[in-house]
Length: 297
Ligand SMILES: Nc1nc2c(ncn2[C@@H]2O[C@H](COP(=O)(O)OP(=O)(O)O)[C@@H](O)[C@H]2O)c(=O)[nH]1
Ligand SMILES: [Mg+2]
Ligand SMILES: [Zn+2]
Image (tube, rainbow, N blue to C red; front, side, top):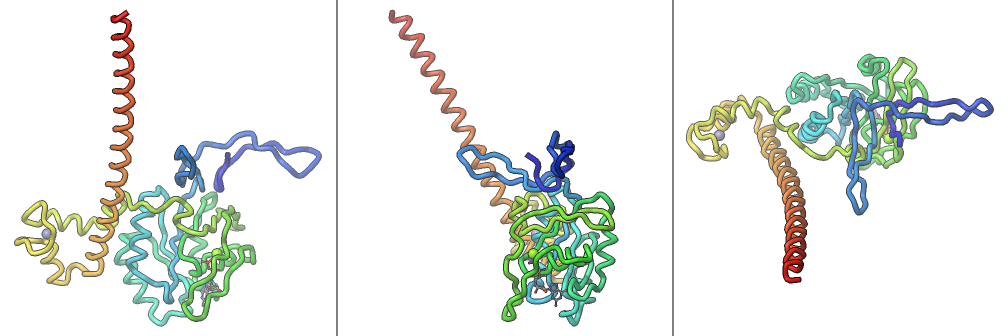
């Protein structure tokens, strides 16, 4: 079955405006999640995504550590992440925020826009190459649908009015659809990361925190916990101000998350091995019992 983002070959029916899908073209990339059911199977939720727009609001939503987490997850996806800081019209220190985010983004593109006023939307438009598919990700209420409408130059996606008290929106986008934009390229406005099957940190942490990983190799002990061990390069970097404490704490946190995921996967693998082993030994016992019986006869 085709998923959103798939290219298909279809045959148009002469009599109506309908068409029949003949084939789904091979996918360049895929986002999938485990479909619920007795046998866990893969459900492709989006295909051929080239870029991920990680959208954050420059209001209450703004959180550097959350952006870092999004990046770590997005790193592994095969699509190019771009950070979009929306609602510049509500922010008094956009340049400061931009500098902060660029510092953690390790060379990735960061754009500050206002989807409401249209400011810098052209800059976002230029990032989308013709034929490319872009998925917009971010918490509810950050302005993804408003941005989609700006990029299209018309009202296509429903937008939610943000609740005045906490700036968060209602979930107005509940379906995934592929929206072609006039300048070339396509957009997928998604309800969320989980929707795309993106929740595993995987090895993205290493990619995003290469600098800290590099520092850790300079610690005197190679099993250093960067606590009170002598000769700790990370603690030295923290003391001299070369390493931001918030970034360091998030690195620790995301690493814990990564090893948790790893343990879960190992555990699943171990259970599978045990099950296989049980099956093998049961078969073996049945077989030997059978042979034994034959001998007894
Ligand atoms: N002030 C301001 N409000 C915005 C901006 N972009 C979106 N909004 C508002 O934020 C709310 C949520 O927007 P929406 O596009 O539905 O967010 P989504 O949930 O991410 O799709 C709506 O009330 C929008 O009008 C912006 O750049 N500035
Ligand atoms: Mg929306
Ligand atoms: Zn150390």
